Image (cartoon, rainbow over all chains, first blue to last red; front, side, top):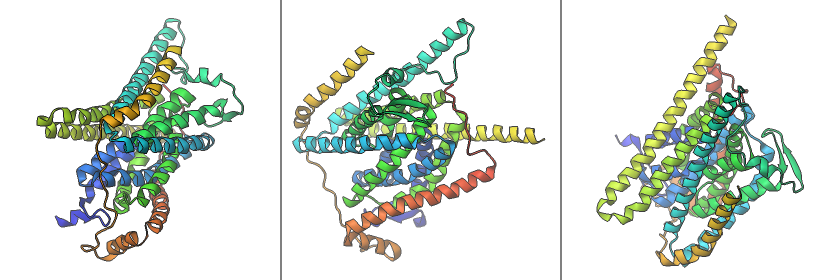
Length: 352
Length: 98
């Protein structure tokens, strides 16, 4: 069975290459569907396959750039990418990530920041999960109230509506983002991207996980456009990250390319699935993915507190991450197949 | 809304003020990373690849950021071809939240 393993030229480790393709497929589906890079899934996955942590982070970054580009191309054809909004945010994202990374390095010089960063991550994930499920509950409440009045709630109505309050802050220049269908101050996406970029830099993540809900709840993008536009950002920031990590000698490009084979298929499945699932379906699935991420981070955090059960907790964290990746990607793939089948059947009925 | 913003601002300020002291309280050295590839077990294209990496990280970086987007575009177009053969409409979608 030696042919199933490949020696990685830079890191010098033997890797089970079908595992890389499967991992790429899973995160490709999830990334294309939610508009995120999925570092929280890929990094432990690569680590399990045998990569040292430093290489796992860098290789993930390199594969993320390619995978997000594939998803962006697909979402772009659906009209889900607001390039003007993406380019406006790019300035804030790059400056924010750099500020966050510099701050992290400054904190590292003072001592280890691992725990501080992980706890900050936990707080952030809890807030995000609360925001998503609170929004879903509010939307349902509005629906019930509308039904009681004998009306039907608009298809584009949302539960939480912070964005319209932020749109009311009219600091010039005011910009119309056509694909997103919003008219707001240019400073809103700039400040939002700066803040999310700073957080991503501090946490050492790509930022898609934070930016996608920020685009929905703060900038006011429709969910599908938030997913597509965020992927555009992830592709560019991923490429920047890949360059930075490659220069530091932390990228195994051969592994990233093998992963891209699976991710190319997965990204298409994930992106096409958004066509068949309504915005709130994406939001609920996203909230569930956040809970999966939260579970894995919390398990990693409590591991040192129980040294006797360390290996058990570590195993549980791995099972949690892989279970969520498999479960959610399977759900998305099934919904995509069901949607495609229904569409083809409707087409045939029209022709017949 | 105002309460939420107060909370968020409070958390951000607290983190900024507390982060250095929290970091100092948890001292641990950062792990070193080996940045030279071991070429003794390699041959063929992998050997050439690792030697190129050892020769110049800058050149290797430039090559990496060229290869990734090109590979992404090629794989994306291939997957696009397969998808379009299925017969589903890949250019339109309904924008609805619910």
